[in-house]
Image 1 (spheres, rainbow, N blue to C red):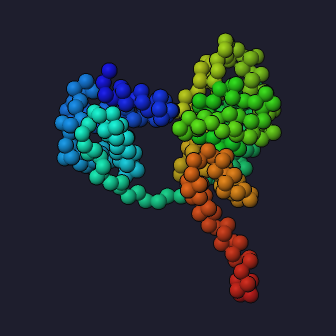
Image 2: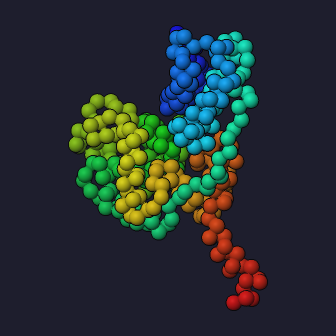
Image 3: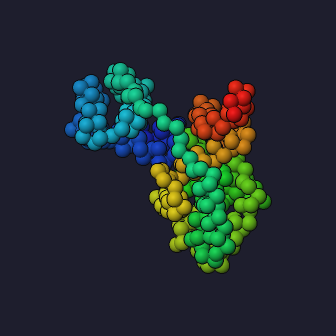
Length: 304
């Protein structure tokens, strides 16, 4: 077993990272090892020098044209790898300790305006009324993200037995394999019942498949398929810019905040481990704040 294999086992057993996160760590480490002219079998950490790391960063920026955020994520994988090797006696020095974070522009989350989401919801009603399995399933996917704030990974990895018997809650496995109970809108119960009924009547799933969201062939749906479904639906109603599942998640959070939701409640619903991650939503609806200010402030009122 190579050092990289041992490191990956540690991530899975001790850190309890998702399979996607583990794959990203493995790729980041193996690409750097290959850059150093080694294979996982011949890699020796103390053969690596600081110049190797600096050249790798330059390669990521100038040849691969990666953004600072992507370089930071890659280097974070290598930092974790080196710290693990130090802790377990596989390396004598921490080459990554002096490699700093690269500045990234601060971006606010993108969300879909209410008017566009009204158009989406109107189309979903037609999809739900249809007897076409894929139209119904796609509507369910969008509703679960838009009304439940699920991450893409949480949706794809959800199983049928994560649903409560009355279909009012969904047990979700979030980042770091942390579990939370997500409430579901009562309007979703009818959609879920019809979805399960179609799975049975159309023989979509023969046997004891666990996945909640299925492909037409009865397999667990892929992340890429969900991304295509959301992209097609949002672009179909004229949404410009980003049209990813994460945009729908941001839209959910923005909606809850604008309807009077408390930040702590939103933090819980989104599965954020820190309130800091949730606080970004307080900066979103600037136009709404301007409108409130114009109406409420005495100097503005007297000016009209």
